[in-house]
Image 1 (cartoon, rainbow, N blue to C red):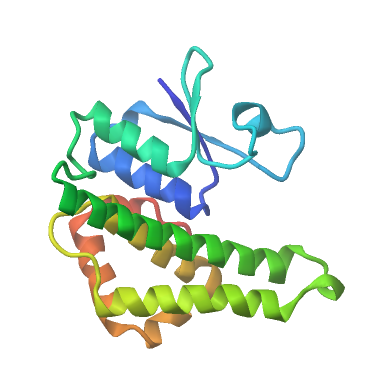
Image 2: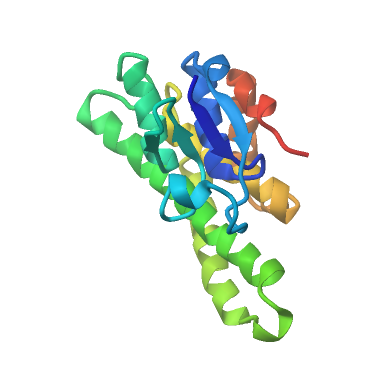
Length: 199
């Protein structure tokens, strides 16, 4: 049984967990917590970048990051399940995944700046730059949310919205009603979304 090194709050780990559940591998993966900020954690041996999620196999081989692990599960399931086979649909799904992951990248930098960095070293301009990325990404998704059969793009976007709820109090919801409706529908269609929720 492979091990998934993860943090429950990580939107990237949540994306992988949702993928695994949808494709029927949820019970085949052992979840093991990780603390990338702890130098004693083996995360840095399993991924030289010291980032999660990491899929660790019985022989010690590893896969990282979330995009690679998600596609691995898709291939393991026969391919073309969450990563469409036809090129137009595939690149649309990959673009949506890039947007969802990019929103998370920016959100994590905002959180780092406002929570981890000592107050006297914080730069409001840096946070504002990242906040602009989040706002533009959410606005684009509100205008054109993912549609059709569930793909990796849908999952990445849902994971990003979940992280906005978790770390930023769901402030996005008042401004983007179409996206709220989309996420509600996604949660109904994909039980793994609620199953991976962190309070």
